[in-house]
Image 1: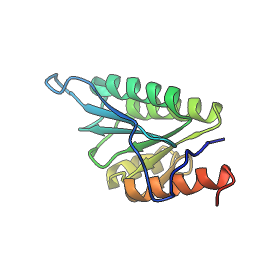
Image 2: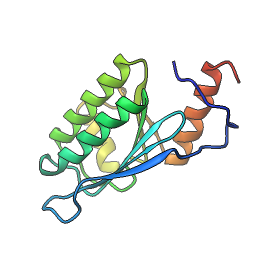
Image 3: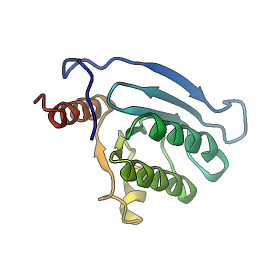
Length: 148
């Protein structure tokens, strides 16, 4: 169960923001992690491949440890590969085991096609934008906390 802090449904306060990864490396991906009151938001930038999946894995592990509900904001990602999907599915399973979930925001058409091809399109709740996802997850947390 997600416990919502004392905030209005439209208010999302940022607790802290961390950058993970080394943008100068080959196949580098910059990944930020924001821990909000209700959800941890992981935001990678770049193409997610086997050579760059480490920072994403680290961020998702930290996100699940901080909050049971994780939002993977894919607005800055155009392509993913099988290694990336494996990392995302494992993070989803860990979050689910802890009573939460992993949701996707702003996946590209390519990412949606890959999810559909791999029959993962029904596994993840997807949202058109980060803002839409945060509003929905905040409303859900408020409802679960008894503050509809």
